[in-house]
Length: 498
Image 1 (tube, rainbow, N blue to C red):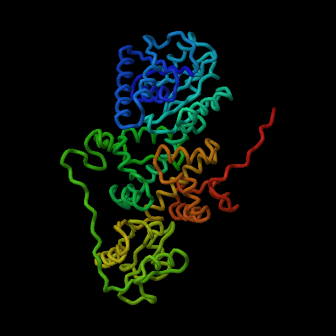
Image 2 (cartoon, rainbow, N blue to C red):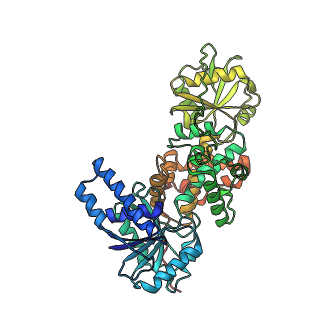
Image 3 (spheres, helix red, strand yellow):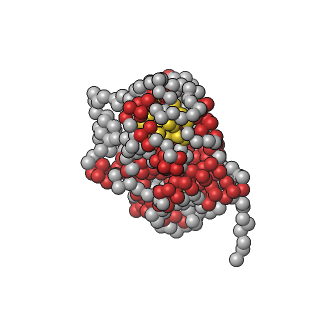
């Protein structure tokens, strides 16, 4: 296939390298002609490095180099099969580019935009033939991020999405097809984690470092949400959150935080500015873990009955069967608060603490305290929980605790994508694991917990907080009621002819 890549920035270079490595002839063009040679030289150095590291042979690297065809002008006539633009994120710029190409390239050439935020349909609408354009959204760095979103616009020809998806797969990447909606698939699905992390911060449940540690050690994420925002830049994250929230007409599930505007205005953007949720300046000290004091002489009693209480007793074998006046009391909480358990069961307020069931068997256990907690009893409880694990995090009491709220939001946003048929369950899980590095796709993650148990969690969160962001999706409720997994597709309705 002959592919023209327009734009030689980071994304354009990556797309050109991907296509040429896969065996395609790549015409490379840029509004600044000298940038084309710079891009080819840059890719050449990457190929040299790949040879040194044994990832390809010298003849293979030379073959890739021969597939580049530099162009002096962007709108040069030619017999190309596909055009992929990777110019700046501006609707007028992209529209003008494709309008010029439409006048000089054959009608058989497919147009693809690498936009990450602009509606594909609006770009296509500026063409005489909008049916020839679709979105082909790559992720940076293109050679390593082996996932591509194929985004048909409202007028895109039915054959084009399948053609592009097959091209992507044949060229070594994985393809997912997603509707032309705000954030497409990956950026939309990623809002579940960061918006709930901000909600936890708004509620003063824990500091960013604690939330990040729980996200990594309990949920198994590669990076905590605040670490991730410091890496990408809070200005970028805030813009994406606002854009998707606005695009979905102020959906409560995607609601931005009041905390971001002031932090962005203050320049607390993360690594790029030196300070964000963490201090990234040279010589800045890392935040130490707070050690848990181990105290063994105080009796430990697990309150309640049921699977969660039994699992906590199994994780902490040194507990008493009956409470004593001096005993420290631990209560597993699922979608509820410790204070509610204290009130309902008549437990001693100063010596009763919550434990998140999601943390029972992980490297970090999570202890929830209330305003009535006695500091000495907190240290005893933290010490007891530290036995048999690597660390203990102490957080303020909240409905569902940290890990439960993060997980519920991740699954909920993914379920809403599936519910609206914006992407298939399989593509949702594939895209999120490949692009966001989650340990498992969000819908499969929900299945690990169980649809019924997750519905119980979200229903309790919704009932206790009254916040519509926690309202269970129809996708989750139906599958819990029918005994189906969250990864089960919707019933395929036949299209009726008018």
